[in-house]
Length: 293
Image: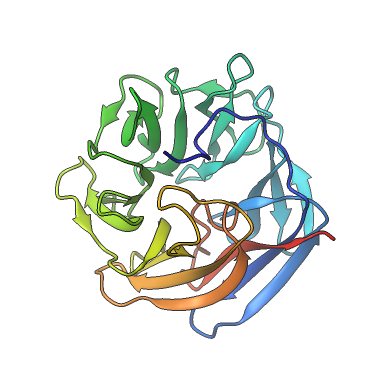
């Protein structure tokens, strides 16, 4: 079972964090900022002006022009992990916050400009990953009765719907821009691989087949590309995505087929847990790390 899917208090790692962007066509990497502490999982706002990332349980807005960060008021939701997703209109953000009473992750929504969080998933643990393009539904990984599967729930709360039922970890569900598909990763064939299914859970189809453990498929805004992170086989357990590993960021067509490696880096957990595509589908934001001596 995935050891990172456990109740925990958000703590830092002894690292330096490098916030960077990568042009998928030219391969150019741009260092935006270096932090003397842990930051994770940048989301790119749809106006192209900001990156939203998490650090030590809170969310921050990074102004790309000023190269400055500002804390986002999230009320009592101050144990947020790296599962945060912006609403399609960018008016709100959904987070996975580890509830104070039991340390379990639940999904909450609050205004992106800051405000009081609203609980969406009373059942726990629930780990957010996607927001439907029509704004009405959240997709997430949840442990129920000892199995980690993919679920959806109305953004205003309600009854959750289970979409997968295969043994082992099913994780990282993210909608395609047209809302027709959910991309995810699953260990059902032995290694962690990228999969795709219809938004109702039907038509589940494996999309990567190589000898790596492939995590967190992110669909470009134009729907043409899938970016994902890969761990070397044997370097990690298939159901684990730890920090401080040599990993690759890869790119493949959304129709399937051959991937190419965009960059090799030291990272893993926190690098691209969430969709970090630029609005024009040309760049990816990501975080790499350096261990402190």
